View 1 (cartoon, rainbow, N blue to C red):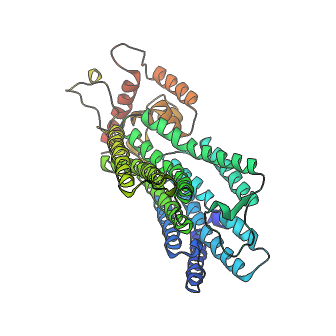
View 2: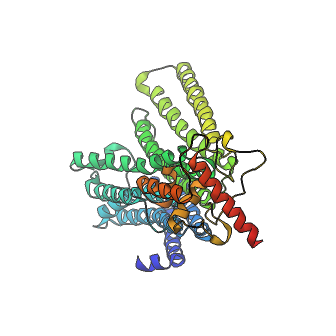
View 3: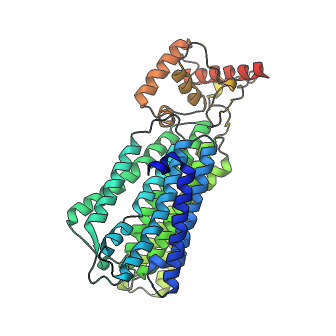
Amino acid sequence: MIAIAQSPSAGRVLAGAAGGVAVAALLAFRLAGHGGFATDPVGVLALAAGAIGAAVAATRLAGVGNRRAGTLATWLCAALLANLVLAALAVWMVTAGHPAAALAVAAWNSAWIPPLALMQLTASAAIRTGARAPWTHPVLAAASGTVTLANALLTTASEPFTGLPTIAPEDWRTALEPVGTFATLLGVLALLLVPVTLWRAALGSEGSARARIGVAAAGASAAPLTVCFCLLLAVARDPGAVEPSLGSVAFLVALAGASMFSTACALIAARGGVEGRQVAIVVRGTGLAGAALVVIGTGTVIAAPGLRLGASSVAFLVAAVTVVVGGGAWAGTGRLARALTPQHPQHPQAPQHAQHAQDPPAPQALNDRGLAAPAGGATVTGLTPREAEVLAVLAEGASNAGIAAQLVVSERTVDAHLRAIFVKLGLTPGAETNRRVRAARIWLDHAAGNRGHRE
């Protein structure tokens, strides 16, 4: 563990080698006649592809200067590969009748939980600056660890255990059922913390800050959508009567796809200068994925044998649900994408009466993390380095919540910094102009002046 943390590249090589061996072993087991979804080539290759995508994202995130997000993407890669390694180990132990087979299966049965937290942490870290982590990160990590441990200790395969079980509820039993239920609820609520705080920060911001934080929020939303898909599989099993092995493979594919989507969002957010096309793709992808879950779940219930509806009735109802839900999602995500897309990404949104046609806003200099900063790293005279950093993010269009999210401070601290900035810049409250707009304008003019002197 320590060696991997100190040498990310060596850790990725080691994890990749272990994952490659696990993939080969699982495919070999499949060819030898060992069925079950753990050895299904589609699920195995999907997880391997997800791990490769996370590894590529880790390298690129580190390349743009966001080492924290790069490290988290590395751990996401390792978590996906660990799922494959534990699956291969469980299949081998069960086949060999090893005494520790039950422990191996319990570990494998919990290996899908850590990637959900890691994909959220990666997307969230992509917009942060500094070494501190927001309070949501340790809370999510602690909750996910608790749920993983509880799932491994309390959930076991039914006896006699003749092979790796599927998602069918009858194949598992849970000791201390109330504790298991509480742990599951805790995990679900924890997965909502990061996306909710990020969406709040995004929708309260303006300009390029809104787009960057919104893309990170969409990436963090992939994890709860994956959990919803898992719940949908239970509906598909009963009352939908869908083959459990098929549903289990679909879940592995969804887990891998969600990890790739989250790391892609992290890359977009970390690079800064988010384009409208990128925002539209990310937001529509997230919204339509949620709509698809609703349509599939509803369709599964409608087509359940217990309802005894005719084929024509089922087709009509499913088509109606698809049109309503899909159309609503398409329209809603389009509006959200337009709202998140900055009209003038190089300067903050300002009231029209505060702008003058003969005096356009100065161009904004961006650092390698996409945050507003004057060329050469100079700051406005009289401000502390932290106050200058707050003003830089304000000039990007971020709200107090957006500034707090990116700089990893509380909104109360942001408010205190802004009050000090306004005083030092001589900005008193006025009826004609907004102090935030005037402060941002001072920062952008200062940045343009520094760049002009350097040139």
